[in-house]
Length: 241
Image 1 (cartoon, rainbow, N blue to C red):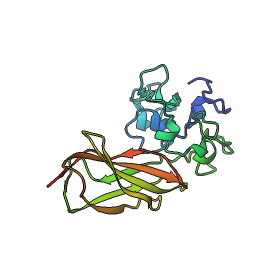
Image 2: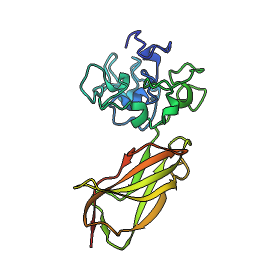
Image 3: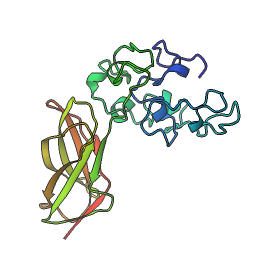
Image 4: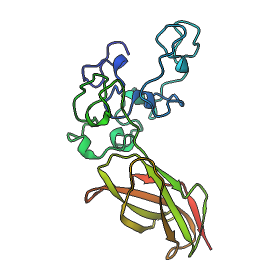
């Protein structure tokens, strides 16, 4: 990383926990499967080379590199940790990875708004503490239906979720979408999203008015009266008699 400062925030990349200011930590975007939603790693460094043992290919050999290859989802010249659109789909990571609403990026440049009073490279409303670190991976987890689950027609079937999205999101629309035709049926609209503490929420729906086949559940969250469509999708499951 040398002295490069990708996001021009005054913190060089080698000291910056979010080098592109997309509100997703470098640790999360690094490609290391053990990141566990963190923004930095323990300080144990047996060989004193500055690479924490957890990610050091050879913890007892000074100068060895990290034990993983940097993730570059879209295969362009920028690995994910300095790429504002890691999959090159035209949607910034701040929206589809960090799951922040547009009000957190008012100039629509793909970077979180705000200052960095603690100098850790995490800006504004993405930083949850005045300390080193503090970035939180925000997500919405559809718990049920699971992959290839079987829903029975006219029976009560659970839709459950948990989340830690920012409190700006207050309600959701839940749609049932046919995999084969794309036909959409709104099951619930402006349903309370529940607390952002990853407590499981459940809403039951008795399957009716649809044909049998493969479906997904699609979640569209609201901020106030503004809906952000198709933000989260369940695995495919089956509705049968």
